[in-house]
Image 1 (cartoon, one colour):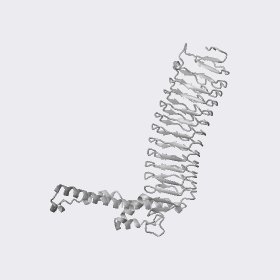
Image 2: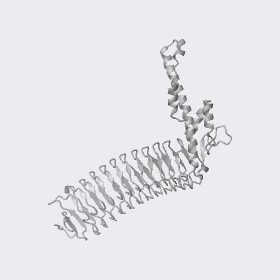
Image 3: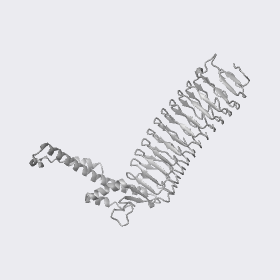
Amino acid sequence: MSSSTSDDVFQYTGSETIPKDVTIVHFSCSAVLIKKISDYAFEGCSDLREIVLHEGLQLQTIGSGAFARCSSLERITIPSTVTSINDRAFKECAELREVVLNEGLQTIGAAAFYGCKSLESITLPSTVTDIDQNAFRKCSSLKETVFNNGLKKIGMQAFAYCDSLESIKFPNTLTNMGCTTFKGCSSLKVVVLNEGLVEIGNTAFYSCSSLQSIAIPSTVTDIDYLAFQECSDLKKVVLNEGIKKIGEFAFANCSSLESINVPSTLIKIGNYAFNSCINLREMVCSGGLPAIHSCSFSGCESLESITFPNLSSRLKAIVQAGQLYAHNKVQVYINRDRVEWERDGDKLCKRGGEIYTPVDVRPRRDGWGNVKQTLDQIIKWIRYYEMKEATTLFELALWKAKIDQLQDDIYERDACRINVPGPVKDTILQYLDL
């Protein structure tokens, strides 16, 4: 049963019918402990502007749609006893400006604050482990979101189209970020991703047009398709060792991106991954060439070449060491299938002795595949020389250790020479499949 202490204040005990013109609600804790606000209890109460929830209620759950479309509600404080805000609980509360969430809350349901277009900031307690899909979608005034350690999952479209959101720093505990999570956050300038994140879902930052730089943690193995498409201000992308795949259209239409350095762990660059990155001039590969689709760099009008500085320095060391056999073997593959090498002594050298491939292989259907095969063969010969050198150094180290034991007896030094047996060397080098 309900009662009123004035014409404006409605006392809620948990079971009665709610008049649609209610303006202020107090939750009675005199007779019955209210553990849950019923699903859709106050839905559509457009005049409701104040809700008073006491800690003494022992309230645990705010039901699905409980305050949905309460368009005059401006603020709410959730008691620490509440562990769950269910789906659509405050959906489309257009005037809701202030939400205080206390420690103890664990889950925020799907679309819980969807369309709360006046909400300006939100701080998630450390007890929250899961933000479900669409939870804060279209909160167009949301400028600040604070995540605390404890959060493990952000569902898809959880913050999509939060047009005023400017910066995000993920907690160290976050491992799962759903697709389209921050899609259309056009004011988002700063994103700090955490070590521990495994995957950046599809369209996660699609059309975040103000984002200027992003560093992908070493724990991320996949950047899914469309992840950063239409990030027109994105100028700097840092890919750390550990990344294996860049999906289709992942960085398409990132018109400010000028260079990309891909780590040695990268295996595949998907179709149209860098489509129409019109200012992309340089791609630097720390290892060999990953598998690249023929259209991965379609529309990259400024791209001149792909360079391999790591391979270049290793090949340069071979030349300087006078290892003509290894050098000649590598030389067989230079200038084959558009793999070129500008030596330091060349008159037209612009790259300081780098191995590179011109991007005019792009139009050829099998161009990237042929280049990759050639580079893989070059890498094998470089490794062959390096492994051979390593066994020689190992022999010298063993010899020196024996000599050190002899102290002043220099006449026995030759007897201390130790050779690594031929079968051992063969075993070491055999894996290169030359």
